[in-house]
Each structure stands twice: as structure tokens, then as C-alpha cells.
Length: 231
Image (tube, rainbow, N blue to C red; front, side):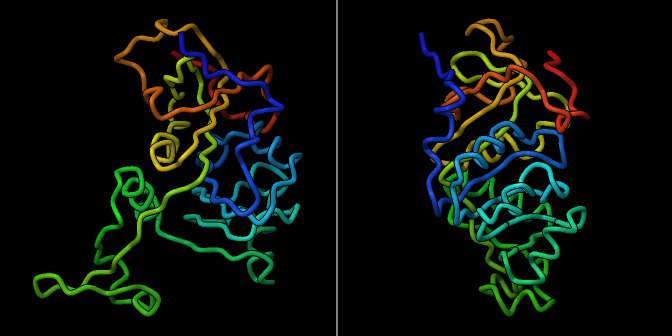
């Protein structure tokens, strides 16, 4: 029987200096705080992080930014994190911001094996100066390149040992997309059940996309707004 569970001290050995890491979450829901803490302790550096947001100062990926482990942040917004904004303004980190829908589609395209996609969003703005502009049937469009990562880190409410996942409500957010767009996917799960326990019709992400599962012993206060392993 397949068993993808892994011990905490082994969970992030696949994460290396200089890699691109996707991190699930929209604010707190779906953010893998425990895996982030392990990555912080591991000291892996020169990372490119892809996340919808930068969390808030002193929590989530902000800890990695503050520790100097991040070189580039690719996100949709960072306005709730004054520390990240200040670091960007001081040019201590590179920040690439995309509209949320564009960011999601770049990740989806990466997971689908596409090189990119065309959009007219931003074509009449200064964004065209830093993008390739394509003329298609008389209309101009910006070429947005797909995003892929070396490793994706996500939080799930429930996992079975084969890696099939269930997310709780809005904690699903970017997690399934990011899981399709990385070479290695590491999941932290509030609850791990035996394979075959989950209703196949309620599985949000098939185990084929998951490589490793870390079972959480407890939830820290950072998880405060998350609903717990609801099935």
C-alpha cells in the first residue's frame, strides 16, 4: 500500500538553495505555516517564492523574508505586510506583482504543460514595456509566461496515506493549482486517514500530484481562522 507520510525532519530535504517554491494560501487559510517554519529552521536561501500574498509581518512567509532567505517574491498583493513593502522599496528583495487572476492562470498554465497564454489585460498600460506584445487577428495581446516551481508547499485539512487531499472551505484557494505546477509537492495535513477512507467524490486533489505528507500534531495560533479537518 502506498504511504507518502514523512517525518518532520525529512519533509524539506528536497528544498535547496536557489529553488523556486510555490506556497499555497490566501492570507492564513491554506498557508502551510508548519512547513514554512521548518524551511525557516533549515536556512535554505536565495529562494524565489510564489504566493498570492506575503502574509503579515512576523507570520507565514514574512518570516522567510525577514530572515533574508528570499531573493524574489512573485505575488498578487503585499499590502498587508509593511515589512515586505519596505524591503521591496529598499530593494532588499525583488517583487513581481500580477493581478490575482493572471497569477492564477500563469500557475494553471504551468500545471497544464503550456508555455504561456495571451491576454489583453494591461496591453494599454506601461506593462507592455516589460512584456512581449503579440498581434492576433488585428488585436494586441500580452504574452504571459507560465509559472512552474521546483517545490510546492500546501496545507490540507485531510489527507489519506496515498496523498488524496481534502481542503476546508476557502483554504483550497491556490493549493490545487500549485500542486499541479511543481516537480515536488509537500503537504502538511491536519488529519491523515487510511487510504480508501475518503469519499472519492469529495477529494479535491488526487494523490497523483502529491509526493510527501507531513501529519500535523498540533496547530499553532497562526492557523487561528482555519476550520479544522471538516469532511
